[in-house]
Amino acid sequence: MAWYRFNLGKTIRCASAHVAASCKYRCMCKRRFALTAIAALAAVAMSACSTAGVAGEAVPATGSAITQKAAILVPAESRYVDVSGKVVVSRDSYGSQYGAQPYPGIAIGQHQSDGSTKDCTLGPAVTSSRGKGFITAGHCDQTPGGEVFVFADTNGAEPVSIGSITGAEDKPTPQGYSDSAVIWTGTVDPSATKIAGRWPVTGVMAASEVRRLPVGTPICIDGAWSGVVCGPLEAADDRYIRTPRLAQGGDSGAAVFVVDQKGEASLVGIHSGFENGQDEATFLEPALERLGVQALTTAR
Image (tube, rainbow, N blue to C red; front, side):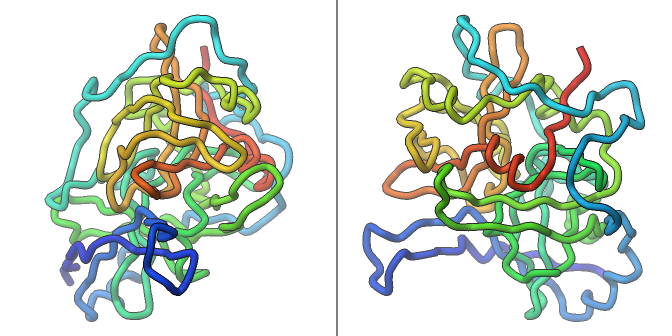
């Protein structure tokens, strides 16, 4: 049975009952499917989520192309570069990145009780003693326990289950605003350690070092709808990494990163939303610590 997808716009979240400048836009999209497709999920779902064990130390790699624990990096002396438009991503008929296997930057949808989905972006690949999976934004968990899937074809008619969102948090913390969660997929393809198949992830930058980056440093995201785009750092304060508006609806959860002159990527954050003309990303390092996971990196 075919699934029918329609973009119904962004989800808007306001800090008060009054619609004013305090309104924060969370970068999710909503798509609606034929109600008869709900039953079809069972036919296309594949069990990819492990429920055994708890988060903790990294486990050995299943392939030689990736290592298990990302080092916390200090910014290099060399300048970081803007890589906007340097790679062409595969897009479906809705304009989002897609594929039958999960990897960073791909669009994900969480099934809702009304037959629609709330769409976000799959973020960095991670590992722990529990298994492997991917980070996304905590606010993407609109229906706790709801099935999450990717789309295998350009028309969005072939949803593939990848698990469910766990450990979601969306609130202020002493380490900055927390907006993170994990999806346990069981396995991660080695290609998931390269952003857009091009820039190898070599580590995670400590939040303290992100805050020391000079204003104007190119900060990049790999959003399901925006693709790979970069903009100058405007501020990295006690809550967010802030840049000019780069993202579109559906980009929540995207990896936020910098690329050095050698073409290597360091992860810095998770795209959360936009407010007052600025994109806002949360810091990745405290999110990994809270979730008990480590970012997967490309072996040198």
